Image 1 (cartoon, rainbow, N blue to C red):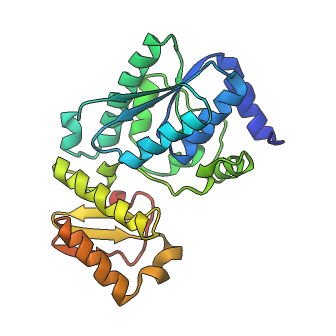
Image 2: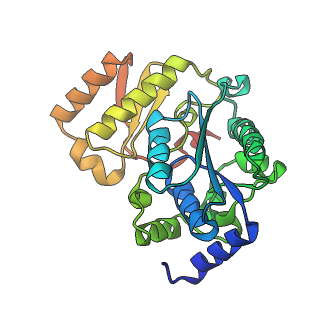
Length: 265
């Protein structure tokens, strides 16, 4: 048990909800939220995950494994690819959240859950996130946001609870790898996922492969840069990504940073 005022306030908040469904991606934030809900509400918890072409398959697998390991009820659904998302407009996050959470609300209600919550945290306010408006319109509760719980605090609580996700790199949907207003093609999403999976296999967790036509721009966590800056590694990655259909392979000298596609806004 964590002896911390903020975390105890979180458990009290969740207990007041009595029964909740959680939008569960398998990421750092939603994993802690699911576990906290189980601690506060026992069996009155339902985790809901959605499979789409722009969510990496390994995230879904990790979500399934976590709920199975912790004996948490979990529902997994496939949903269609919304045409507004294929246009990849600057408000794509709004359409995505609206689309996903309407489906999750519908499924939650079918299972007898009237309250749906998500893992948006207080630090998320610092980036361009039009999806927050969709959550507000659908009356989705965000306990971490309401209680001003930050990402570092979420990682710390996760570590104290011995959750394997405490040091898991942040992942976002694959749409964030494609520039705004560039049409999203299923083949591009598959290439991005395949390339990032390969980089994870090489030990570069949390890396991004952002695409610009047939050019792949790789962003690596800065503490990993020295490990990738070798001729042998460059040749290895270049060969593999070219086999996936990319023509040019580049390394972003600034390394990974959240929301780099938003820098053009």
